[in-house]
Each structure stands twice: as C-alpha cells, then as structure tokens.
Image 1 (cartoon, each protein chain N blue to C red):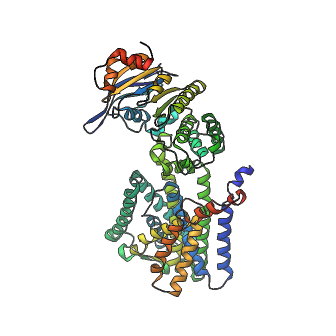
Image 2 (tube, rainbow over the protein chains, first blue to last red):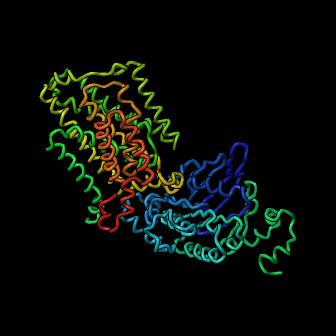
Image 3 (spheres, rainbow over the protein chains, first blue to last red):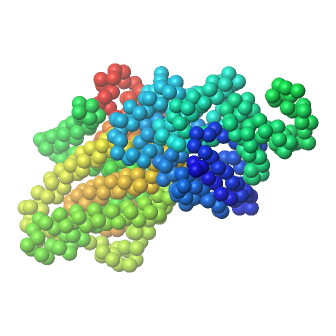
Length: 257
Length: 333
C-alpha cells in the first residue's frame, strides 16, 4: 500500500492553477526528488500535502486515511514532517526547545512530559550534529545550522514521510555532498520516506533520489527513475528551453558518451 | 522532583516583592492607597502578560474584561442584596457572575478575533470593547449610561462596618492574591506544553501549525486565563471597592494602554517584567501626580520613550543580558 497517495489534486489561486490535477504515489521508505523551474507548483504541492492549503479538487490519502480536509495541526502527528524553504525557527527559543516542540506536538502519543521531550530533542540534535549549539537561541544560528535544526525538529516528530523543501539551496558542493550522505543515513536509521524538493541542484538529485518527479506549470511532467527522468527530452526542454541535443546532455550529466 | 521545584524558583523574587509591598502598606500609616495602586498595576500587567507576552497578540480591548468583571460584581450586589440570607455570599455571586461574563466574552472574542493577526486583531478588540459600551448605553441594559450605584445596597445588606473593611482592606488585599495567582499561572504555563506551544505561535504561527500545534486551542487557553484574571482585578479593585459603575468609566482604552506600558517597561513575556513595570509605572504616576499634578503624562511619555530606547526588551531583558552567573539567573525569568 502506498504511504501517501495524491489523486487528481488541483489548487487554484484566483485564475492561476498552481497545482493541476497531480497524481502521485509514495511508498514507505522511498526517496523522491521533485524538480521543476520556479513557479512550477512544487511548494504549493508541499503546502497542500502538509495542510497549509486545502486542495480545490482531488484527494490526499495518507496510510489509507483520507486527510484532504484535515487541518495542518492534525496531519503532522499522523507522521507528516516538513522543513521549510527559508528556515523558520522559533527564534527566541533555544535549539533544544525548538526540537522539543517537534517531539511535544508532532507525535500521536500526547502524554510525554516536557522533560522527556527535551531528552528526545538531545538525541536528534546530536544526530544532525549541532550539539554544541543546543542552548543557543535558534535565531542566532547560521542558515545551514538552521536547516539542520529544522531537520532535527522534523525528525523529532517521528515522521513516516519527511518533506524537505530546498534543504540544500545556497550550499556549496561540499556541503551538498555531506547533506546527501546525511539524508541517506537518516532515511536508513529512521526508516522514513523522504520527498526532497531540489530546485536546480542536479548534483543532489542524482546523489539522493531513487525516483524523480518533474513539475512544470503546475502539472506533473515526468515521474520516473532518476536516470530516465533527467535525460527525458521533455525535461531537458523545460530546463534548457529548446529541443535537446540528447547525446550532448547525456554526456555532460552522466559522464558517458 | 528537585528539578520540578527549581523550575519555579523565579517565582520567589516576584512573590517576595508582593509581600514587601504588602507589608509596607500594612504597617506604614498612609501608604495603603499607594500600595493598592501598585498592586492594581502589577496584577493587571501580570494578567495581560499571560496573553500578550506569550502569544505576541496585542489585545487593545483588554479593558473589556476589567469592565465586565466590574459589571459582574455590580449586578451581583444590585440584584442579590435584597435576599438577606445570602449575607456575604453576594460577593461570591458577584465574582461568579464576573467570571461568567468574562468567559463568555473571551470565548466569543477568541472565536471571532483570534482568527485575525497583528493590527487587525488589535482593531477588532477595540471594536468589541467600544461596541459593548455603546450597547450597554444604547440598549439601556444594566442601568444604561446612568450606570449602577449599589454602595447603599451593599451597606444595607452587610452593615457599615463590614463594608468599610471590605472596601478599604479586603478588596485591595484580594488584588494582591490575584497578582500572585497570575504570577503562578504565568510560570506554570511557561514551563508546560502550553508555554512551548505559545512560543511557537508567537514566533511563527504557520510553522507552528505544521508542527502539529493546535494554535487556536492554545491561544484560547491563554486568552481565557488572561481574561479571567483581568475580570478578577475589575471585580475587586473597581466593582467591590467603588460601589458604582458607569460604562463610560470602565470601558476606557486608556487602561489597556497602561497595561501595555507596564508590560513593555518591565519586559514582555517575562515573569518579573510586569512586577518591575508595575512598580516603576505605579510609583512614578503616584509621585508625579503629587509633585506636578496634571503634568504626569507629559513627563511620563519621554521617560517611557527613553526606557524603550535603552532597553527594548524591558528592564528584565536588560537584567538577563547583564547578569552573570547561572545561580542568579535561575531566579530571573
């Protein structure tokens, strides 16, 4: 059974169709990359899944349960964690408290005490490697540390599906490689499915995703294994704007003739 | 266990401050009036802080709760004083009525206004406050614009001596109790899930929702608590003490502004802030009214501006920054 099933989901803002009849299935433990040009509806799709917006049409089914009409705060405890494109820490709270908030409200077992969640928080802070900053005000962290803290906060919610919105934007290649390794590791250790949105960083897509979904103008353009998706002529056209010289593109990306 | 108790250490300086103020008023002749004023501002600041300091929502219509509290007591005394067998029970009835009115208005306001944010929320609250005032005056309920005068009824029901004691001591003393209760609830909320949820709401409400926080629930809890305490202050400091109520006297935004000043001076969202703010504001208001009657606001405005510029996080924020030593910091929140 699919962990998350999206059926015919449409979201409009006035006359603009931000997400256009998207169908999508995510299995437990999968790592999926979503790519697409700016304004292609990736973030809106994330927002529809996490409950920030209710879709105008279509259904969202999580573990066999219809969650289309469920408000965001009721979706999160079911196992839907997410991070944000621009990190959104609770600035005045310490890193430890931020992560503890995830553990406190993001799980279904509502009976854990505040002290216990602080202990849980310590574990995830260590996992993402920002232990030295744990008592700092989260607003004073560097952007990369904030991203790591958001991942820890989302992991503390014990998600079954983690939506990562541009976790690697603005990082240098070395950090991206580290991040890719890190995401792979937490996927194994925490046994969760991950949908990572990676806008233009092909290095990350190739390193991370088993399957790639390409969005364009709100619609799903391609949904295939990473290698196939990125060499698909339609995808190349979306990114480069003209019919591709397939062989050249392939040799550049994959290093083969 | 030890850990649980040490979490509440910041309560010690606050309660000590209340105790000292109370003892000064109790034993030094002629000081009671000033002490009552200080208790009033500390209690109001502390109560308002539970909602504003924790959620970041600025409720400009907060005086609605104080006013409704006053009306609760007034109605209780006006309509129940004829039943002699109730005795001192009419005060209790007044309190229950006050809490009921405050809860009703808090829940309604939470349902309507708490969906709004920032300036829209503030304006909606002012609107509710003004609307209620004109409704009472226009619909001529609860005495309309002529208000309720029930001091005589109170004296008749309880006797002059009891009433004198009630209005000159017990009413003010109870304000201290409310101030202490507000301080306790403040730190209890801070240390519990409610506090964490509200911190998240204050910093980023949308992110909080995605983290699984039922933001409306926690905002309503804080709003209701804050409203109850405000109504309590109104019930005792105005309703019981003055013996009369006019809509034009109680639904006055000026008192909300005083709450804001008290909390911002001391430090919003802190436990000690409203106490320090209440003391600074109450004392200077009292003192300025003595040495330069009529000019106190003119003098007070620049003082507030200077303090806000020097210490934008309030006095407690400044203290926290300057103080060294973890032992001492345990007592400051």
